[in-house]
Length: 183
Image (cartoon, rainbow, N blue to C red):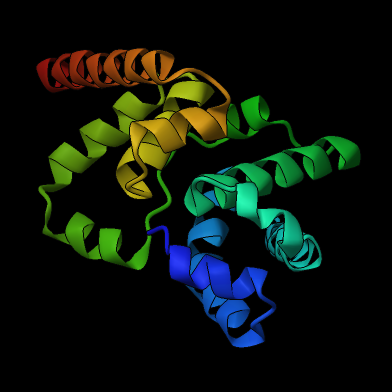
């Protein structure tokens, strides 16, 4: 996903490159933000805010190793900060209230092809994940980020990311088996 050529053009002040970057990341960040809040206006405002900051601070972008990690981390930080400021929802409350998956268009097609029972079991099993596990699974498998990028976004080590993923998958497997056994 990282595009160093596009990033270099943005650093140089190329407004068209900036527009392409915005178009490339808008939907991804929007989908990610909806995991934290159902307030679409808030999610969109946060996307606008990070892209405004990106443009106004483009001279400092030369130090960015991974544009992907930078944008997701900045967006996550901004959104969580705004949620706390507004005292509407915390990350934990959001995931406890609604532990269902929200799928992108591509995933909706895949979902329709899957067995209905398997989908129901997976959905139920996700309720047993902690908010941190749920977020890690989402970033790794739905956003297709690397373990390093997930670690950067969650502000943990890569080793801790592997542990969270292993525990998450183990929890999902155990609970799916249990749910299938009970049915």
